[in-house]
Image (tube, rainbow, N blue to C red; front, side, top):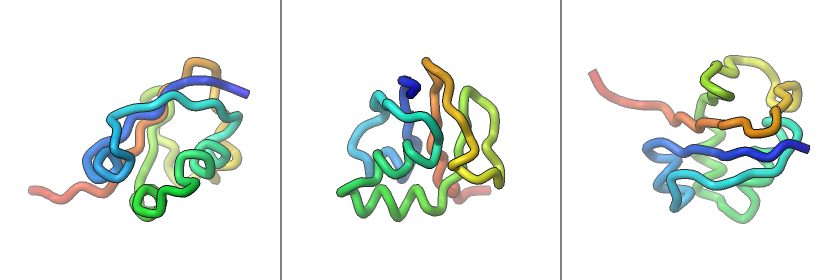
Length: 83
């Protein structure tokens, strides 16, 4: 089980109500389950988001396969509009 912090950006930050929070989870899948529990709006945003773990993109890897190291930083990046 790793501990670290989750950073939320844009709509994810608004839905979470905080810019960042600590976590305790072994995989990205477990972390996503924990942070979205009883947070329907955050769950909606997270389902469309991409993720960075310690600055590296998760891409299309299954979240259950992404192992989190102790002290990891997970960034939740919702889709951005702009141009």
